Length: 279
Ligand SMILES: Nc1ncnc2c1ncn2[C@@H]1O[C@H](COP(=O)(O)OP(=O)(O)OP(=O)(O)O)[C@@H](O)[C@H]1O
Ligand SMILES: [Mg+2]
Image 1 (cartoon, rainbow, N blue to C red):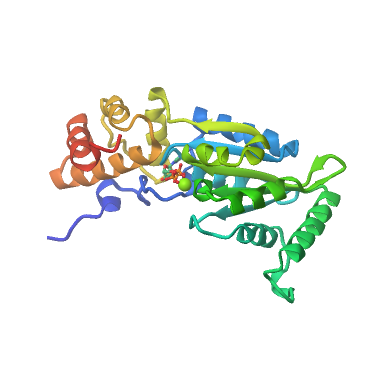
Image 2: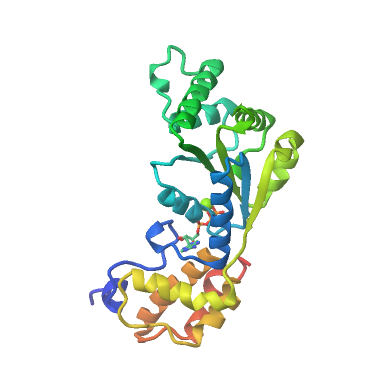
């Protein structure tokens, strides 16, 4: 027998509960909206260095993507840097930031020359300043920045100023470990203007979050029983990635059972088998 795809079974155009970050699914949760507004406020005032802390799967990368989408390129020069390794040298950070701001590192006689990189970055930031554009660098997975060399590099970047005004906004995004890491470098920790915490969805938001994702995926019938939402909250504590995983697996289980609706028994069974020990 041909296996039914989720799309066919539920008559949807796209899988609504993937764990990848796709900004078309962005949901304006209370927490996300508050964090977004705080970051935007800081950027608009050239606040310098800020930190967004949130547990795993809370939606930090999603928020970064949303900021990139929403900040108008006429007024902001936005770049996203993802730290992929704890051992990256400090100069790598500055080089990447310079590239993201539009410095042509490729034309340098020595692309590793730290003074040249910083000089050219400074020139670029002054140029952007002159054009009235606000430079923003989002550093995702910033909890992977753990050593002195990396911290010093960041500190140097936050010191770039003109007539008492910061020349670049840096937003560090990471899991709570990031805060502990910053403590290892008190001068850098002191430069953090604002620390923002991203929390989970509230219980009252679970249904709207799920329905929002369903409608974007093209769902025309509601295949979630009304009694599932409290159960989903109980099993995920409102953490978006866990909600997505639970909903996705519940859809698969629903197909396996040949059921038309996802009810709380399905959710309970799926939660038990897939992530009972994650919370
Ligand atoms: N506001 C939101 N609207 C819609 N989906 C969201 C939202 N927040 C998170 N998600 C979804 O939850 C999942 C996890 O989000 P994301 O990857 O952004 O978390 P994270 O905080 O960056 O996690 P990690 O610490 O592991 O990097 C993704 O599938 C994402 O699409
Ligand atoms: Mg992330």
